[in-house]
Length: 104
Image 1 (cartoon, rainbow, N blue to C red):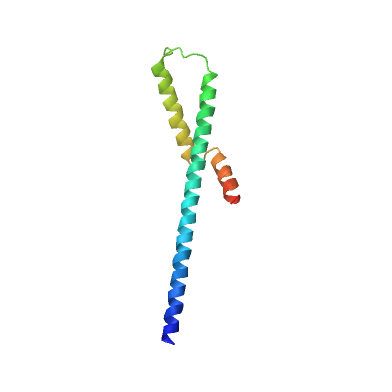
Image 2 (image 1 turned 45 degrees about the vertical axis):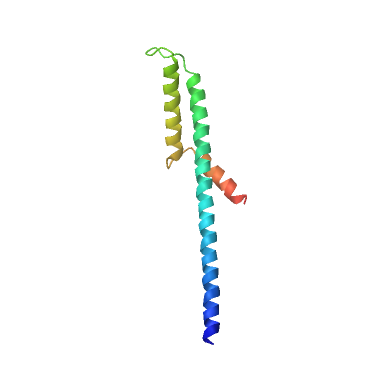
């Protein structure tokens, strides 16, 4: 009788460990998907900001130079990353996450 209880406990423990492993793997995949969606939104925003900047006339204060182009590119990239990682982003990452999560 005692041996049966030990066997049952061993099976329950193994099932419990397997459940925890599966849940941990699932949470890691969800986190990875969220990070990918955030990265996509940052790339999208960077492209949008760059396109908007290209519509502006030349800057009267600073002459156009390679260093100024690099600076504005870095500034746009930083702004896009900050906007995408904020709590109130434009919503592309949330929409994309829901679509990809539901398609599993």
